[in-house]
Length: 304
Image 1 (cartoon, rainbow, N blue to C red):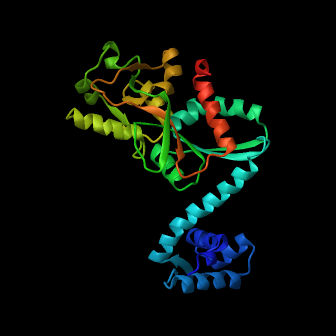
Image 2 (image 1 turned 90 degrees about the horizontal axis):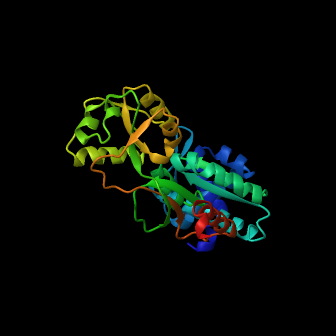
Image 3 (image 1 turned 135 degrees about the horizontal axis):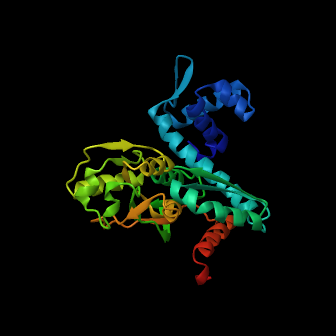
């Protein structure tokens, strides 16, 4: 197979067939005739010498070989789009599109003001923000689906991702002023685990920390509640029955207003930071460089 035969259109067909499973739908999206899509599908199978597509109950399903090609189709398509944007945005930042992915805490408590200031300075730039758990943001970066990730997590090493810690984001124990432990300036691990506890959702890095903390202290929770929303967790803790672990910056306002109290988590050696994360294999556009410099300036104005 000559590599020139595997053009972007064919890869886009593979990507869309995996998503919609219908040749008619793919043809409509790409503004092609249905026989043209079928022609490209047959050509790919001929060039590769393997079956890439199966028909099941009127739907087009990728074979294992088809899914292997789909993995690279997504990456190549994203890189092609990024290359186009990088060239267009190389101008004086008069226009462009920046795709950011962020975990909940930085998306809620850090980025709104920073994006607002940047948009005021560069009104022609369109910024989209996707809020997902940190592991999902890392996966999106690896697949070239976003330009930049801002995530709150423990330190990590990745062969594909470049990380820069931009501020600390330590976890704290939160409780209501009416909770029985509110009289304790330094609750013990046993006292915390004996209280009704709210766990974060399964994909949350805070959930993984809580589980590791319990395991390292050889503790089990006799009663716990699982909520997949930080705001819901804070509201439930305010009712007075529960405690939980959350990001310090996420509860600073409630603590100042006397709605919640926070304590250090005993026997906690884990460090958490807010990281600025990019893909090592992705060329940093002028827009991306300008925005990351803007973040650093907002967080560390005295160093500028």
